Image (cartoon, rainbow, N blue to C red; front, side):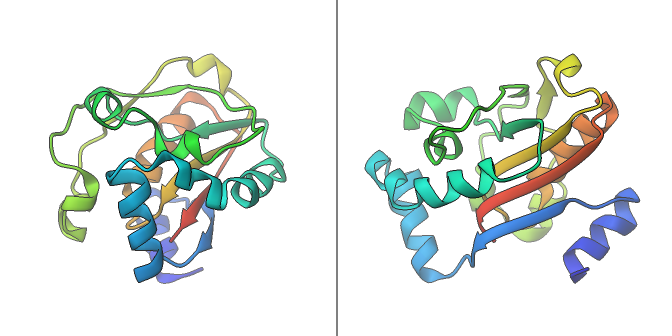
Length: 167
């Protein structure tokens, strides 16, 4: 296990089986800036096919994209994670319940790790005894994915894994 997974294992007593397709380097940071923050929705097409292939190859029963806050959806007009999915059957079982004014990308590592649970489960019955794959755009500290995973685990998911475009 990597050091990051070891820390989560120590904190939770379990860890996510996570796969990041690319390194979050300067090129990926520039891509995310243009796609996610500048709203260039056409850029979803750059990685959509490959990302969707990896997601569809998972052995998950349910694919769950990380949701965005209502204010983010109103401002941006799209969920950047869902935009990366093409021909992927996903379930909307998570919702943002804490409308945090500060984006994760504007926070330090320490601040991200202290973030309170931002999600709630819409349909907990959909994940009981299921293999769930969480899908996100960027894995930085893992805090977002572990918040989501802990809810799924509490609801009775059999297995929880995650995949992100970049880590």
